[in-house]
Image 1 (cartoon, rainbow, N blue to C red):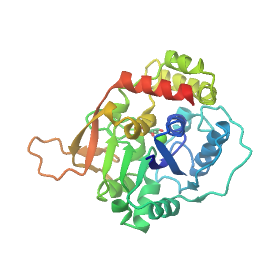
Image 2: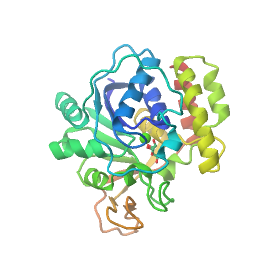
Image 3: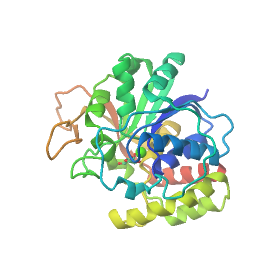
Length: 308
Ligand code: RIB
Ligand code: CA
């Protein structure tokens, strides 16, 4: 039985890799894809989803939604993902369906598949919180929610303590974290343990499939920005781990924790605050991924994207 997933994303280079992995995973049935504001404006993200589907000559496009802009803006976010959000690859686009409201599409899709939907959120949580504000019972009606976001015991990537997806809309993140939904959180602590290198890209390139062609056009920009801003050879693929968490959960280890979000701190806005005390007095509200088999994930990714 395929797992029905909604992917809420802000493509974005690593979101694009996450979409390629999801579209190339027979275990998943993608029942909706929604664009959130974050790396790029939601309308640009929406078009980038269409570009990726068109590039893959994907037969039956799932319903597509578009959300409202994220609450914050980050100067220089475009540098990381390129002016078009996809590494300045300027992929062609000939057809753009009319976008539906992301929160409403999320709610409708869940109503049609009660208890069966896994949401994979790889962007600021504006759309997810929007759906919860329209219909709070969504939190109980989904099977679960995988979120790429936060930094538990490592530094942030947009401030000393905040990770981008949470920083961009901390109020939305807090509402989602405290909603009662069954959450798995993939923070920077884990996503930064996986580095995709030029050698990994070369192995996929040899497969000469559509996924390889797309990666060859978008990943080199990421190699450049990671060398410049992270001082690493290769790049992180934060969002692709969120898809893998649903397709190959055995690659990850989790810990039950209570995690909340700082929404007001002058220095700590967007910080994910986990209760790590030995005798914590708080009821855990999520499974936080604390370990990843990095090599195993990379081999899985290369194998899957070589077949796509
Ligand atoms: O901090 C990493 C996250 O921010 C990823 O989702 C990346 O796409 C950016 O949105
Ligand atoms: Ca993203």
